[in-house]
Length: 221
Image (cartoon, rainbow, N blue to C red; front, side, top):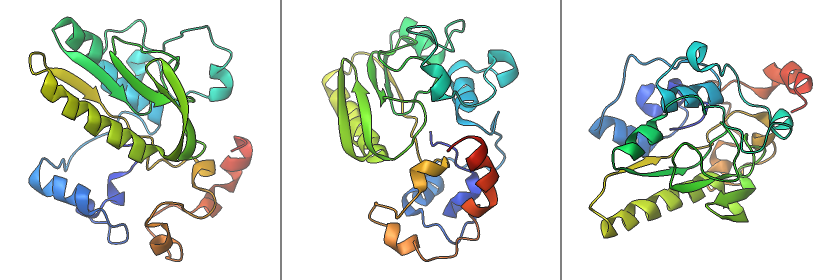
């Protein structure tokens, strides 16, 4: 599950500026939805809907959870505590459960909602794709590389490890924190291997930061 990504930012949905060959191949060889709807335009409500099967009007999360407020909330708080979530249901039915990626729905320090294997960031939203604090089960460390690449490698590692345990089924939730759209995370030159290819292109299909200066100032981004 990607974060804050409109469908029209993919080649398989008609974008001619952004190159997404691997995702285009998945769309061609797998299932591509041509009539799909997101329950909310923000990340936390959408993720909560996936976990609970409920609309934002039912689970009560209507916008992203502000880290400045999260720090003041009760210890071990969980925005989905009152609901029976997907991993909890599957756990009761014999599944092993893993969550690798962006959570942003509760306390990040330890697993929630019956997750066995827990890897996430040390904060809710992404200020930078590099140099993030990572919480991996009981360990906490700084990962200097790109967080999306880390989550991918950890997910592949987890799936390969399942070959040692074929007795029980498993659920792997892989909510990426990219491509994202929170301005601090994309300021300055891109550090990834393809950044230089896009740097001087006039990306007409992508909303420009100049249109959103008011929002940046309002939310102190």
